[in-house]
Image (cartoon, rainbow, N blue to C red; front, top):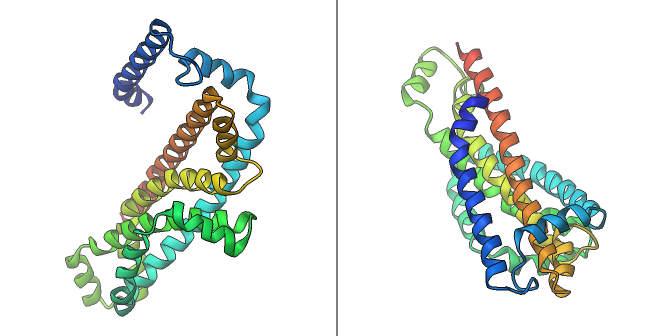
Length: 254
């Protein structure tokens, strides 16, 4: 597996290295002020030197992202199961779910602060709102893609709705569910940063606000680096869990 990862990953890694070299060279060649666009070496230096200034902000964002992701995932899976098992409820609620995603979070978040204050609750609501939708939609699609032939066969064999759900529909929906979870994992970091922009005393979003207001563009890029890294780590972790869970589910079916 590691060999396959290296075989597939060396090309994007090479492109990234070339972009960094071009960025560094252009910054030095055209003497771009660092407060406008710092070179990668300055960003790397700030990443190392400034660790004591932002490590608690990074930890706060990780905690908020994980808690919000767990809540959002639970809500998304629960909503998907309810809408799948109750067709009337799906017909009534599904259009409202689509409409809810047309409301920009950056506009809704200040209202949540007004309603619930500057505590952790409005932040968790923001993350939940950005996480649950892709999970709900992906899981519903997984349920709909269940083989009709197998469903009909289990009905003929005398299986009840509970057995059909846990033995057929749920295992078949797992790949789609994990697709939604991986999307939501990256959204959870974005939601945490957005909520920290609007009102917080710590976190990467708060750190970015302070850095941009003081024209420390290198620190802004450090924050962006950690946001991207966290998103990739969450995505990779869920991909690993997906392989284990789907494989175990397939073995049980056999």
